[in-house]
Length: 283
Image (tube, rainbow, N blue to C red; front, side, top):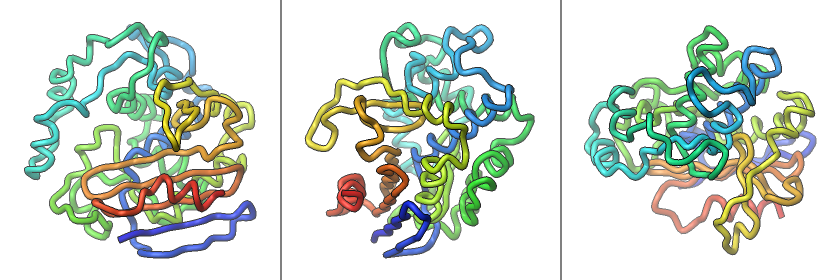
């Protein structure tokens, strides 16, 4: 099962496959980054000021340079998700990964951290004075004119969402929050970002300043990670940028080349590589 959306530079939309909402998985990180950067523009957050007693700042959280650990390596987490259990309380999650013990000095290294984006979600709530659900609606989904995008909080929020072959999944297992929406709206969001409709040009330029990564391959010969965006270390605008996401049952890739965007969602397992197909559609 698959869904594909292509948005042209002028905003024209081409769709194929299913039209139901799907989980955006880690493309949610791009959503969180946009929301937090809008709060920076409003003077409610700072990119570079240390956060309270923490040694890291918002920029380091958004770029996975904070030193915070991740929970992706915790086998008990994966087994409890597979068993359909209720999500852990945040306190248990942080204790399990020993979140107070940083893996490295902030800014010195890079390691993908969902815990870091949990901190971003908490900062958005604290700075805006709103729940994360309402903050994302006001800061991101509304300004982008997205009709279907929303934060899923409980299992019932996934009743009309195409989840592939998994059942009884609780969105709370994505501790930084799980946005769901159509593939078309995912593409529209990235197109609005790249068209300058959500952030000031200077802020978008900050978002595109990536940290070069050591992982290289046929698809990623020059990878980097910006502020909530996967991109290229050199000439980021000359290569598809955006974000991939994967969770139980499905994978999504939302990528832009300039203002042209391709979004691909597939159930798992699949013979279609969502990222490679999105890149192909933009070539």
